[in-house]
Image 1 (cartoon, helix red, strand yellow):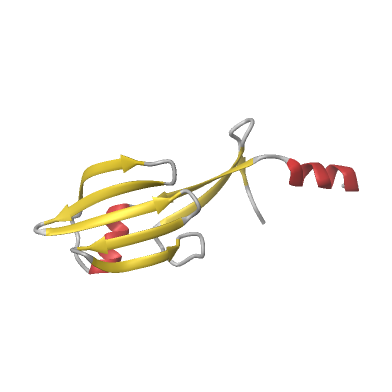
Image 2 (cartoon, rainbow, N blue to C red):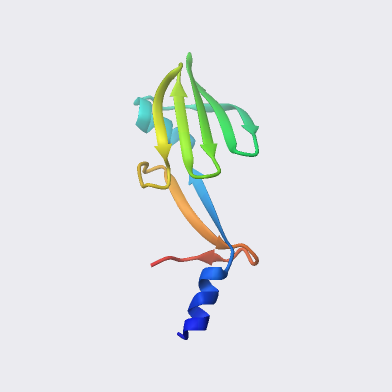
Length: 106
């Protein structure tokens, strides 16, 4: 690969997407299964979800930067980066911004 071609690869816009299995992640964090989504909100900085399991209420904020916050009944259970490999329930994918084609990293 020529140096110019290598530089062009680094100059190509890339979209990073984090996919999270919210019920599975909440089960991992709380030890309780059967979480249901009952509200969703979107802000320019994050996507928020409200989930419940019986009388428990979970509030989840997934920030566009890859950061996440999870509170259950007002108690913080997670406050950190999803992209650091801290959760088995979050998967990071990369796509070419112009074509939408997946990018596989070695």
